[in-house]
Image (tube, rainbow, N blue to C red; front, side, top):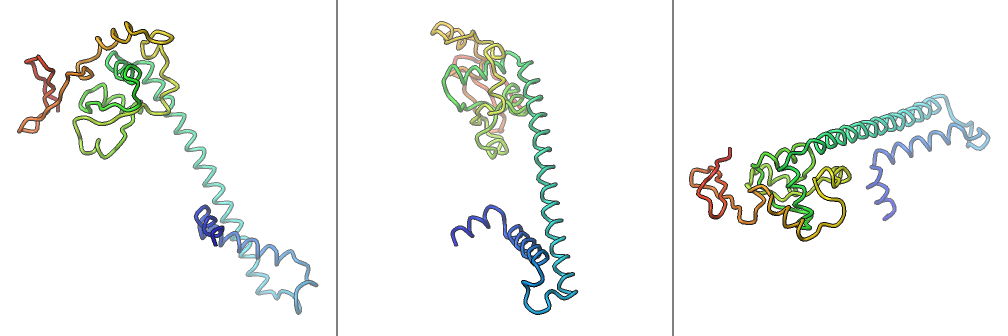
Amino acid sequence: MEFLGRLIARWGILDIFMAWVLTASGMLLVIPKQWLPGAGLNAQLLMALTISCVAGLAYFLSRGVLLMMASITGAVQHRRELQRLSLMVSCLDHSERAILREFIITRRSVLSLPLKEPAVANLMENGVLKPMNEQHVHEQRSNVDMMINLAARPLLSYKALGLPVGKLSEEQIEHLKSIRPRFLQPDYKANRTHSGKLFRIRAGDTESQTAA
């Protein structure tokens, strides 16, 4: 029963039924007549078995064609995604590079980033960054936990991120921290007023910027 349960879970009831119909019909059609009881197969039964065999073959042939088309479509979509990611990585601006460098500087795989920032939104829309929870994006939260998309990681070289080759020294890390965009600074905060507008506030600054 456990084997049957795993088989049904993997292939489905219809696939197993059609495989049984095809196998049984094929065996009855090719088995020698002297092995069959009585006068063998009558014309009506022979026709039914032939139709069942043809239907089984057509079913699995169509399944094969659909699987092949799905595989080709998936490969084309993957290639287009890689091309889109390569184009995006090749033209990163200062803020976008700084966001991606932040994963390296802080040695974290997940960062909480302000979704309203154009650089963050652009990286997410082009597939470089991936939200940990899509629901948080739909809820339009001010900050969303992000990670670098697995498909984009091989494209993010030292040159693409504006990093020196090799292990970063403490001086280089401090320099990269000092040129972070404002929204990546540790004293950056984002608060909502009673009107629902989002104001970006940095400690010690009197200037506020309003985001849509």
